[in-house]
Amino acid sequence: MVIAMFGVSVIVFALVHMIPGDPVRNSLGTRFNQELYDRKRAEAGLDKPLLEQFVRWIGNAVRLDLGESFRSNRSVTSVVIERLPATLSLALAALVVALLIALPVGLLSAVKSGSKLDYAATAASQVGVSIPDFWSGIMYILLFALTLSWLPPSDYESPLNDPVEFLRHLVLPAVTVGLVSGSILTRFVRSAVLEALNQDYVRTAMAKGLSDRQIVFRHVVPNAAIPIVTVIGLQLGFLLGGVVVVEVIFAWPGVGRLALNAVGDRDYTVLQGAVLYLAFTFLVVNLLVDILYHVIDPRAELS
Amino acid sequence: MSAVFEGGAVAAPLRGRRAEVWSAVISNRLALGGLVVLGLLVVAAVVGPTLAPYGVNEQVILDRFSGPSWDHWFGTDDLGRDVFSRALVAARGSLQVGAIAVGIALGLGVPIGLVSGYYGGATDAVLMRLMDIVFSFPAILLAIAVVAVRGPGLGNAMIAIGIVYMPIFARITRGSVITVRSEVYVRAARSLGATDARILRKHILPNIVAPIIVQTSLSLAFAILSEAALSFLGLGVQPPQPSWGRMLADGRGFIKQAPWIGIFPGLAILATVMAFNLVGDGLRDALDPRQKSVIESRGQNV
Image (cartoon, rainbow over all chains, first blue to last red; front, side):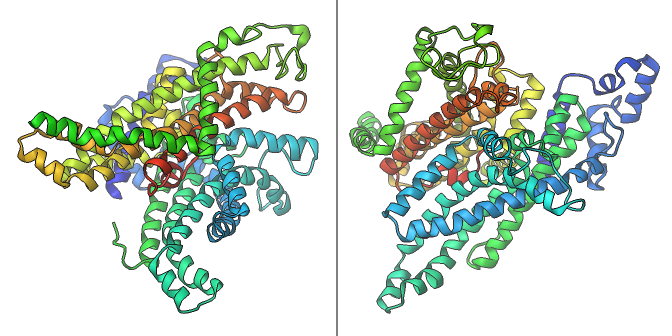
């Protein structure tokens, strides 16, 4: 875990420093003069050798100090933290949407495998995993915001200011991301439950004369839960980091869009901070899933 | 004698199975549907520019924003360009990026997985750790970072997507190698004095090719989706070459006024991605029913 985090940091640092263009010169714009430029560069430590810059950056990063933005001169840590409520609320809401779809549909689909319902669910999830979310998002905006005027087309409202507006703004992006995630999860839930249904203990339970309901909820679900939890964790990891395009479409002020804008602005420090945060979140969520795995299934070894 | 043993024994059953797999895929109606769509796409990619009724950058300002009609099947965009012609020609770029990106992922990932699974130990630990690190980057962000370093464009989009998908191939290959590396035929080859490189190439690779083929089809689906996303963000295919992602981004501003500009390129992406997914699923059922799909193992879209 620590090794992985270190590796991620090295790659982030290296990638960001390979980006052509000079952030200091950019941030000065028309105010450029050599003396100011040299001073700014020295302040940012950019005149030092790369290795020294890296050691300093890592040392500070461990203390949650990610430096200052070249654009706004604000601390990168606070710029990233500011974006967290939007990112977290979208990721969690999308996960809720995904689970509300995937758990019942996947379970029913497996239990009634081969039925019309199974066929319809499989077809729907096939469309769901293939749909580009940046397209479906625009289609939802067209239908629910521009045509029916039920929901706002974009932007974010803080839950502290106006909880109702916050939820209304959250619906479309959450559904856009959640339907895709939900389709992926549905397929997984279905195959995990199907696999559990074919085990010997299910046959034993049937032979004992247990009802279908008892078999499904007492024997199948707990056993299918183990692989399902892993995938839910993976999904959450990706949701916390991977919805850049949907954030762009809905003008959602999350960390993904922060990173994308930082690329355009050549704001090294913000880009480093944002990508580092996203990759770390993924690693941490994975670690938590590993631990949870161990709790659910004591046979599993902690890796 | 050793030539017969090394060449024949391993390859013959594989060849015999090819017809079997093919008929299994064909008899799967969904997979067949996917194959038909892919066939049409390949035709569009090869002869699209000659089939297109209008030039991709031919602007008829008087015909701006006209809806779908006999003259313009998919309507026209804000510059009076024919959306159908542009969507048709864009198929080439999309398939190209997908194929080359997945080629890069295969070319890097499979050898890494082979070495990692075959040698095990410290080599395995180091290589897999590296793959984990690449894997822990949000895919689209890694692609954005690569494009930021190397500049936007088709070539860089391919490299970026290829790197993102490399760990999946490495992992799948490694897992399969581990299951076959202590099989009798591998030990037999070794006792006959075959080198490691020869064992990997002639004995292990042919036996683990099934999951890699399935993965290739499913990864093509995701690569095309990623390319569309990058182009949507303006980081992939550059104008004047048309691309579905870019067309969608351009049409976004006129979505209320002229929804067809955005709807059709999106449908094209959906159809292509779905076709690759269906073929991949069909191949998996035919080749290796126990394997989980990439969707389930990676659990990610864009």
